[in-house]
Image 1 (cartoon, one colour):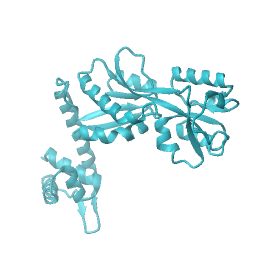
Image 2 (tube, one colour):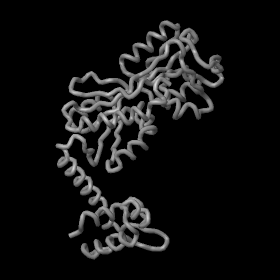
Image 3 (tube, one colour):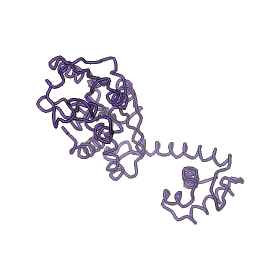
Image 4 (tube, helix red, strand yellow):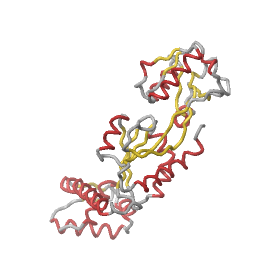
Length: 302
């Protein structure tokens, strides 16, 4: 029968289609990996990998066995997770993180390198969904942690505030306000403000700001992606209030729009982590949240 290590080697070859890179992934020499793949083929009595000077490719049988090998490796990781569940300081083999699309990519682009260094043995799985669905899936144990734009009200969750993220006014580059270093609420008078779906508390604050400024809040676009809002601003359909990390990632390299901070009445949203209060790894999740908070520190309130 094949060994688990041989199946991992085959999976690495299937992922890279290159023996040298596969050996690097498995932390072995290329001759060792090649020898183990040949021994696996001998044990199974079939060719799994076609080798030539030009390329490496799996046979149909090899591709199917590699697919099952990855599933077996995932099951083994799950078994290790279960076995280590009594140790609150041990990190599991797979960390399942649910994120909201308006938050996940922009936070993790900053924090993921540090997470990979700190938890090198952990595979971090990230899935996007709506906030309500994420909370339901966390409660049912389908996620380990959530990354959210507001603190969930559920009493069964422990939360950690990661940062207060400012919202910036995003306007067309040729707009009358584009040359200002900062803006006041009064400057928004007469403007159409395209708003994102950002939770009840912040949505209410934005509505109040629009009323005070004499601006029109266009609520019909609340479910639109941040990229679409940015493109609508570029097309002259209005202005928008977009989060600082998104501005850093997408707006600052955009030629058609610019971002200007609000000075005297800044708006911000809370970025937080949540996990089940009953989780045996709560202490580890607090450490993960603390690491992400440290990574985000330079952009807090920015």
